[in-house]
Image 1 (cartoon, one colour):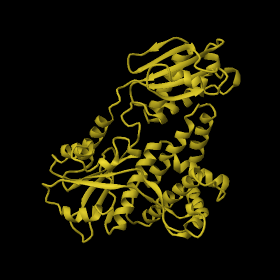
Image 2 (spheres, helix red, strand yellow):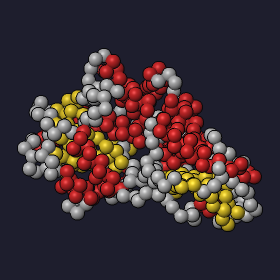
Image 3 (cartoon, helix red, strand yellow):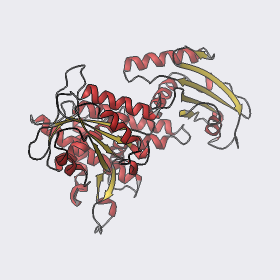
Image 4 (cartoon, helix red, strand yellow):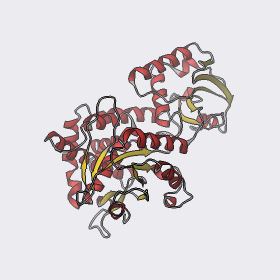
Length: 415
């Protein structure tokens, strides 16, 4: 990025608004802010997980008049990524090489934060490899058949390798993630009033707990069916267990701390059993000791989930007819410190040994969070105007493969 990039913000925003005239980021932000007015201490994390939606919204609200720190950096991240999407979209529209489903994925990412993060990582890897002399092609997907993300030709036009990109967040391995939990709560509260459902007792906290053992469906039809079951059970005002991963219970317990404190309800909820992934309390002052929470009851097996996803990518999404590599992104050192990547006792190294048993496995590329870094040592004015994207990248290689590993190392290792 060069200094004039920040002057492109108005044009970038207008192009995004033209590409997506319904402006789906507004619904994302409005829904999160609505919950944030009721959530004790959780809304901020939802903002962090949806930087593109909030970044575009910050531009709509304040343009360049953003305070130093979170708001400005979030807006800058959104503009950098949006420009990458728009530039690729122009290429695709002109018949060039690019993701054939880019607009659909960009739109869907505003609904599911994990999908947007996956798209960010895929496009970041494509841009990074392209900037280092590679030629990138995107495969056409047949309906219902999964395939790899990128076909990468190393500088010099050698045999290409297939690359599949995966991004893992801090709650990977949970059956229900925070964003899913808040989706469930938001949908339930559209049809159920907590003040009408829960009993109010002086000095006691009333909490409705929804326990979920299976992943929350993404399909609109399946999600509606789940909410219909929950609402029907809640309206009966009885404890509920469908013996298929859904339980509902009501807890009435002594308040923890000062009952007049704004966090009294959530502080009490944390004392209840089960890993809580989402919580909302009533916004009305008279009902401030009423809340609803979602807990994930399945075992948390993060590395099992990473290995399962990586094995599927290697066996199903990579074709096996060409050399293949996986690029796995771990957000904020969620698994173990990124500095341990190359250690022979690390989980990363153990995973590579399992994956390299496949004959087509060439490399396991590992990446950290994509973050903003200063681009100029002594900028002439506000320092945060001169930032660009970067993330740590390392790779483990299959020594038994006849692919020109030296060229791949030269491409990745110095960075």
